[in-house]
Image 1 (cartoon, helix red, strand yellow):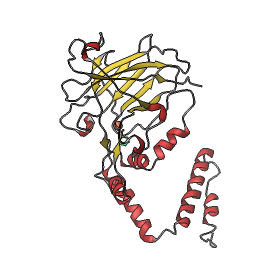
Image 2 (cartoon, helix red, strand yellow; image 1 turned 90 degrees about the vertical axis):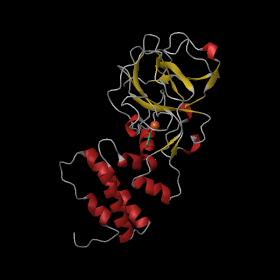
Image 3 (spheres, protein in one colour; image 1 turned 90 degrees about the horizontal axis):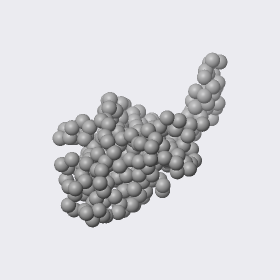
Length: 289
Ligand code: BEZ
Ligand code: FE
């Protein structure tokens, strides 16, 4: 094509596909080019701005490795990860939310009532609930992969002072669908800001904070896996999560309880001598189609 112009380049691009291209790939690539070209026209993108954008992507690549996922973080702070979550949410279950970069595989199995707080400072939190189907019937044998930050706001993979699986564990429900464990009350924390995504947050006057949360991945045979997080209703960042992870149904309330009411059957039973917090939260899974 020799008669290329800024007005026909998008249409010309649409013709640059081989006949055997996977139809879905064609659809995604054509739409991507459509919106990318429209964006460049819309803002009259300059060469310098284009170079800045490319340099940004190169720096994101350089800082990324098996544990540091700068492109995922970029997608998170742009709201893309959450948008994809919401597009793919099926009604009837607990909302999904961002996975984030700090999940690690191989966490140890923990029993119902296990203690993840260990000797860490901070308020005791008893997190419990049931895994159910959309009608509220308990799901037997659901596995809940749990992770959170330590009281210093760091995940174990960010913190040489924690062991690999501190504040990580996998619990399996019984016939009543119940899960429950003690931990330390999670804290609000900042997403990593020492890379190019941090530069964008600073340049656009955005803070890097996430409201405190517990992460869960719930899997059960015959049900759609659920990646989610739950948030306390009193967190100051609840309505301004920098990665857009909060959904109304994922907000819970901590209820403070006197030490003598601490339930039997938990690793800390009989050892709690100060008020503790309880977060009751049921997790609803949707059956596979
Ligand atoms: C997290 O919740 O662990 C997280 C999510 C998105 C970006 C950074 C951290
Ligand atoms: Fe997190």
